[in-house]
Picture 1 (spheres, rainbow, N blue to C red):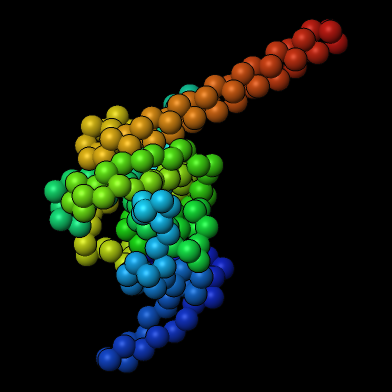
Picture 2: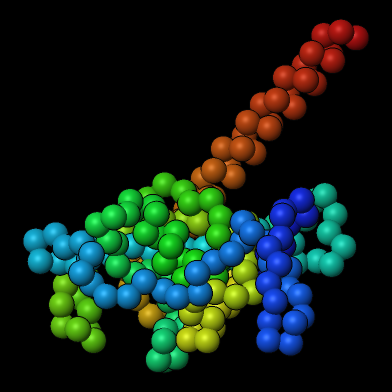
Length: 212
């Protein structure tokens, strides 16, 4: 069963055949997406939407060594009509924070949960299907859990791929820009970590030389 964690306290449910199913209590998700726009936020007539770029690091080799750098992967989903690929996004409602709405939409559409990062930016764009202008906000989400069952499981497919592949297939220009910002941010963070590690190792070598 997806997402089960050791140490969790399961709930016991009986089906029509009196079979027992164990469901982790902390992982129980309402299998229905929010609908309707009576709580929808607007700014100067523009609908406010929020979304996430779910990502993870994965080593391509089956038996990785300590020298193998993990590869960045992002999760894209298909549109409900199945004609395009995009990142999870949806309406920001008045009873939610931006981060809360982005996390909810990602759970509903892609079935993943994790740590949400700082806002990647704000974009204004026009919807071709509704002939209306929107304002969109995107966040990175480091995936920690991927569920087997989620609200839009039967409406969409989810696909892990490289950032370059995602940029090629994503149907929205503003989401491509958000992806570029995420890649640049993560690359910069990794470079800073590498520099800090180099400084630490250099200081240790100097201390060892001084003690000899």
